[in-house]
Length: 103
Image (cartoon, rainbow, N blue to C red):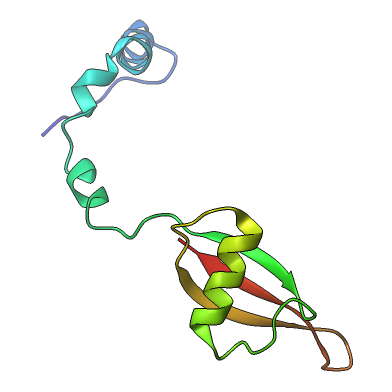
């Protein structure tokens, strides 16, 4: 337990503040690289990219294999996989396009 009885305008307070600043700015990054967060990254899914397609490009949003082939052709990525498809509607509720999340 650390008890501090000095006021803010004393030389002891100044020394403490300097020590805190020295620790913040002079601590090497390597001290914090061995944390558990690094191991947790391996379990997360790969990053996704959202592609916006016009309604004229998509014939049937339910047919995933056709849509995936279309996205591969348009994006130039032969390994693209569809994660999710969302309709983009205008004010009147008419479908104007699709947001396709690919990995």
